[in-house]
Structures are given as structure tokens and as C-alpha cells.
Image (tube, rainbow, N blue to C red):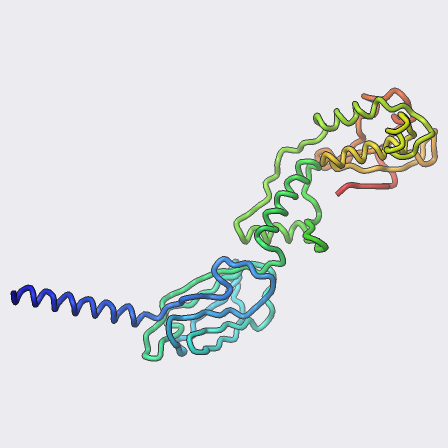
Length: 284
């Protein structure tokens, strides 16, 4: 009986000691911005502990993902340690490090080591993923990356976009280029049924009356190529037939090439092409 009482007393003391030890731990309960958060603009960082705190060794750091230290002014307010960057945070990923002993509770118990990260970005994670899809589609049709990626009225340089998505472990996969294949052949075959006629100057009029001039054919080809995602353009230049002849080119392996007129047409009114001219229209 005495043995059991002693064992119970020992367990009680041990449990109380453990509870006392856990209660004495000074630890972070939340951080704003949250771990892995994406925020639209620079802000103060608020680190909340499980109890009121005071200064310890003050070893708290804010660094860029490349390790560059960012200057902050640190203030304690009750349970919070507030880090205020001395200048606005630029776009990119940041790491917060609260080293052991940086702060203490009011009885002198040191904090546990803590680290967290966040990203400053003008676009959200969903927008990043959507931008990647659109960029990869563009690459598949044109054989190159676009110069910019648009988000509403905002245009972001492709190099900047790549840096931002990299902060989330994302990247652009360059798919196999899909041009000059079935879609192009089908469009050219459909166009070949229209004859040359000076009566129509637009693709719509050419389809309505069954024939049109080089302007009409160019408009038709440009419209249909763009519709299936093939980057194309209309160029204008002088020929022996006309001072303002127009023809269509499409992007293949990062180069502009003429659509295969001679493979589908017999008249020089369409086939008389050249490699350069004034760009009238160009798809994105």
C-alpha cells in the first residue's frame, strides 16, 4: 500500500514538473504574414507569443531568400514582437528567423527558435498558375516565351514573372511547339477554295461572295490562324502587281515564315510573297 502511495506521489510530481516545464516555454503562436503567405505589398511583421515578452538578446532577422539581411526596427508590445522594415520590401521571398533567446517572458524564460517565410508579389498564387498556363500555350504556338504576361490592365515582364513564380517552387515548362501541323493545313485547304477577286477586301466579304483580293485573303488567314492559337501577322509591301500587297506569316521556331501559299494556290495574286514588310496586324 505504501509502495502504491509512493508511486502515485512520484507520478504526480513528475506530471506537475512536466506541466511546469511546458508552461515555462516561450513560443510563437502566430505570425502575420502567415508562413508561406503571399502579400500584395510591404507591411510590418507581427510575431505573437503565448505570453507577454521582453527583450532578450534581440537576435531576430529578416532576410531575402538569397540571404541578404533586411534592416528592421523591432518593438515589443505585450505578447507581440513587431518587425518594421526600414524601407519598403521589394517583390520577392523573405525569411523570418527568431533565434533562441531573442526574447524572454517576464520571468526570464527564453523563446524557442522560430522561422517562417512569406512572399511580396503583385499577383496571387492562382494568378501565377493561370499565367503559367497561358505562357505555356503561347510557347506551344509560337516557339518562344512572350515578352510580357498580362493580369488585367497590368503587364509583367516575363523575366519578372519567372522570378515571382520561382518563389513558390513553380516554373514554366516549355512544351513541344505545335505549328505548321494539322491546324495550319486545314486552314490553308479551306482558304484554297476562294478565288482571286477585286470585289472583296475583307475575309468576311470573301467568304460571302466566294472570292477576294490579297487583303481579303490575308484577313481570312490571319483571323483563322489566330483563332486556333497560331501566332501570325499581316505584312504589307510593294510588288509588281500592287504597291500595297498583303500576305500572312506565322511564327515557327521563333522565326516568321510565310504561310505555304504556293502549296494551295495557283495564282500569283496570292503567291507573290516576300519575307518582310510593314506589319499591319500581329497576334499576341
